[in-house]
Length: 106
Image 1 (cartoon, helix red, strand yellow):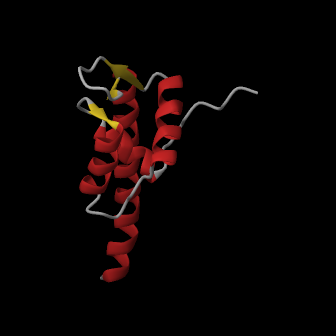
Image 2: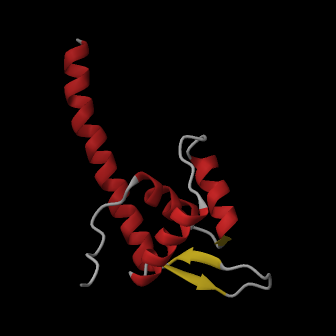
């Protein structure tokens, strides 16, 4: 049975895509996710490579040639659109929540 196409991202998936705006290898992705999230989100190798495999299958990321003996990845244009779509969705969640939370604070 084919896997359902991603509609929204989990928090680790979102941070992995954020880290792929420039070419980067797997260990660098794990470090970047932790850095971007101020240590809140940590992605282990198993989770990371499962996400990468899924992102590659959906053409959200691709491997790029590297002179190093490491696999290097970057977002595709489709991946950039997915990241922007998720960013917009998350901003809408914040906007919706803010209107309720700020009303209760008054």
